[in-house]
Length: 554
Image (cartoon, helix red, strand yellow):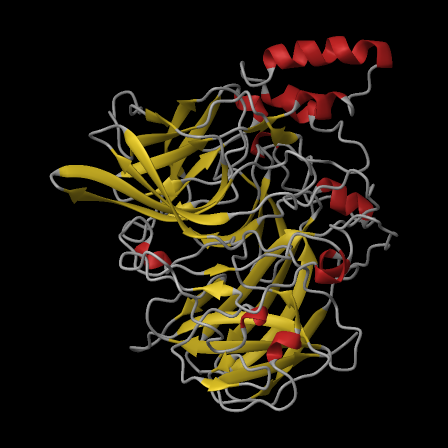
């Protein structure tokens, strides 16, 4: 059964253009394939992102809020079996769609202020739609229908994170979770291969920071205690109290939030007061000291705790690290982390990151000297860093980051990337990182790279696949990108043009990985997969190494 939401007029940059919500669920089966899909390429490509099902207030709508919609494509035995998209049936979505709420809703799973709209992954045989901030996560079926909330069989109440990291050697999933209900702590957890929490550790922090991600190495966990914190003034505006009592109420909440733990039922009740458009009540806090913490992954088993060593740094913010690892240098142990650093976040625009610029840094933590050395690696506006995840926590050579110069803006430029969208840096050996232009397709299309056989397309940009007819593929406007499915929020929109939605599979080898695609490899193939969909007004001619399937419009 599919559902349709009622569209609403919008003046928000995060509800129009590339961010415009999809209004309808759809199913397409036996998709037409031009070219050949490898017979061994079996799996699902999934993406998740915010997509309001009900009317929202454009003036308060946050880029990170909105109901969750998961899109999926199933590939099997050389065929594109189906495409479908589904809202995750939280109580608010079910109400907006006029449906019965899912039966399996646990009050212990977390708050319900927004949907699990940030990541989608598989672990221990479950498909999970994830979000952060103490909000409930959900389990989905193979066909993307909603089963209900997920608290890992009751072993991890109170919400999870949008960005867990899986140890490639053990298969265990590590996470750092934050929530205003946790007081001045965040929680480190390890989910075993059976899908249950085997270890949890409460980590003391200064207050109530937005700890969006963390870094996992083979030996350590690295925490980012940075000055984007819960803003009680944003919450008090939504709490239904008389105007004269709002300031006293804010003072009382300031004395509690981020200092003491809030019981689950009270936190759940407070989360209901979010108005028509639940926002994300976090902003830049210049008074909050910035620091990073290093903790051994396994502490004293008797206490289930491990010491955290904190390193003071200059004020900044980090959404996403690329990867980290530890090594010995001149007899001393250091931790090396590549990440995207912002000078500030949510300081002017509290509804999204449009006023900040993320740049690629390498931080080296000297455990003997107690210092953190920061080195700028790329001055362009980059985000969504990824590596081959078999190197998670290990020394890596390559990273993949799209250029997002115009991605978070508004108007026609919103969601577009510059002509050199993706940087594939050789991390240990280059001081200045050079982009490998237009591997596989032009960078505006945001495809992860395959080894190039460089030719030149009509715009003068290098391309790999022989001459293209018409203009360069940079003229295509991406509507579904592949970095990473956990955070890419450009919407996979239902086609209304005659060409419908087209998608492309690029097969490569080496240290690339299939972001967001569950692949069951057979034989000795080392194929790495990237999937991207786009809406093209001027489609190029097919070329070698490309398989295209068509989603019919309507």
